[in-house]
Image (tube, rainbow, N blue to C red; front, side, top):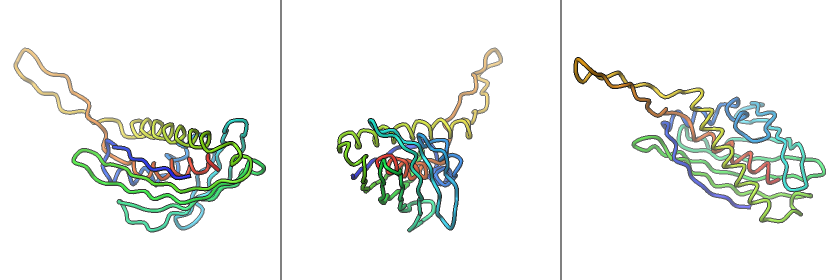
Amino acid sequence: MDMTGQRTLQVTQQQAWVALNDPEILKACIPGCQKFELSGDQKFTVAAGIKMGPVSALFNGSVQLTDIVAPQSYKLHFDAQGGVAGFGKGEAAVEIKPLEKGCELHYTVHSSVGGKIAQLGQRLVDGVAKNMAEDFFKRFEAELEKRYPPLEEPVRIESTASSQQASAGLPSWAWALGLVVVVAAVAMAVR
């Protein structure tokens, strides 16, 4: 399976990088994730419960980051086993580009699956993977807003009789690493 995508994030490139490298944020955002822990040099142990059609299983695996160019890009290699449900493995590339306001996250995923999940059909697998990616980004955005609430602008006084309310700005921080986690989660879900 191949999947590519991009997201515009309302955070800085550095903030996105930091968030995507935070195991706690990733664990909270990956659908069905029960474990996302650092287990070595740029290596993570992951466990996620995945349901795809009539097949559901707990997938255990690992994610290894390579070719790291902080805070711009990296690659991740993943491998997961789901017992009789099957297995999955693959590679993803993530790139975070700064924008005038925020950043843009680009990702490409190449994965393969085997076992019962592979027998479900490519359309079902692709659909579940896309839904998981969208769910991840919704959770990731909510988590970022919770951890980094919008800053308030100072109150402006226009006259002695009136003043404007402070308006909320958008948070600026870490979205790019979230994509890597999404890609890993999607890859594990597809497995």
